[in-house]
Image (tube, rainbow, N blue to C red; front, side, top):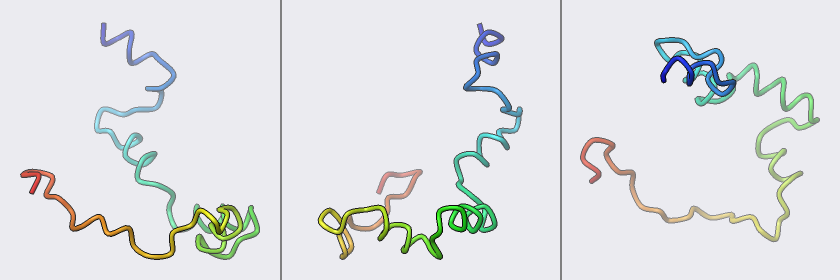
Length: 75
């Protein structure tokens, strides 16, 4: 069964150590981010956000979600 799953397009490029998966989910490198911003004509993520997210739905203050939880204990 596993041999069928690993042939699915969603799993293409996954290595045994998960490096490709991690790279895809960690986000762009600073150089990739700079290239993206240059492509869309923004000089920062804040500028891009201001250009694309309507002011009426932006929240300017922190959301007050509290502290982070420990991934091992949940506390």
